Image 1 (cartoon, chains in turn purple, cyan):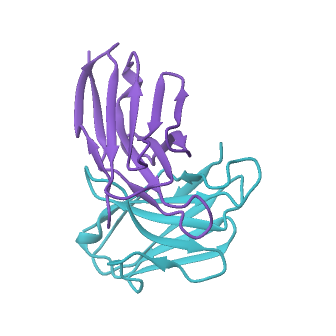
Image 2 (cartoon, rainbow over the protein chains, first blue to last red):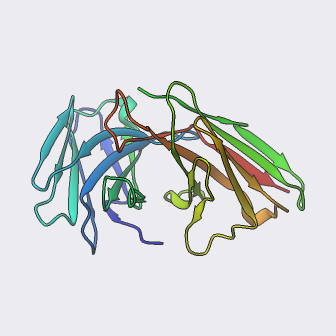
Length: 114
Length: 119
């Protein structure tokens, strides 16, 4: 099935640094979501974006829905040890009944160096 | 937020046996649930969409006779892996979409996953 391309694939940063990752698609999505997954757990929703151009924050996290509707980025400011995990973007074609399937990105693995 | 549980969290079985995984929405009703499979260090791939009271819709390449899905109530969907083989070993994750109420109408809540190991 289709996957969204995320970059970078992995990041090794020091605590306190800012993090930036992005997600691109060859097709349009009308909703972009960012999830975090920890080992042995299901993904947890961090931020949801519903409108092209939208910039949304959730604490230290900020995400934007690209104008072309084919990309999104996630920034994490002042990283802390509990930010460690795998971050997935996900796109949804139609956030209504009928075409609500989520297509997930390839993931960005974040590691914080002590 | 809404809570989705899965049972069991881990299962080890012999090749050729069948395994049933349950997905429950604990504090909301879910007319639609989704089943995903995640291989080590890979992304989540949607297997099927499960609708309460009707047949599941499978993604291309997923064998419906091998992965049986039953969504008998608004709070429970089950995935049965029939005649499991080692290549079916994976992390199976379900999600449930709220039918309405407190949450945004299109949000999916994910379960904690079930790790299946087939020997």
